[in-house]
Image (cartoon, rainbow, N blue to C red; front, side, top):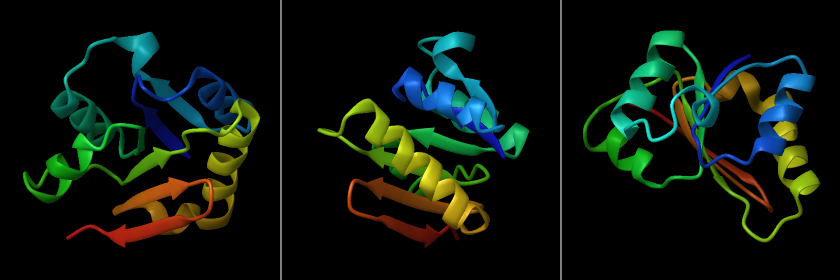
Length: 117
């Protein structure tokens, strides 16, 4: 799967996704400080799922109509690094096809998926 990981995503998550065979473009490596609108444009251009920890992307998607290939908001505070990447890998394996054109929220307890307009 093609993924754009915003710079707030933990590096161990990015490393694990790459090890699982996903094509991950990591903003922290590419262009730290990239504006949110540019991150969305990058994900849209690459037809990639955007992984982020930044709730502001919900506003960009729902209020401003900027629609990438899908957004997964990670709300995994308090989990150990291996638990975080395990949750992300699980979500992609079990629900990958549902994440396209959707705004999803992944927590330590579950995954909510809302299709984009």
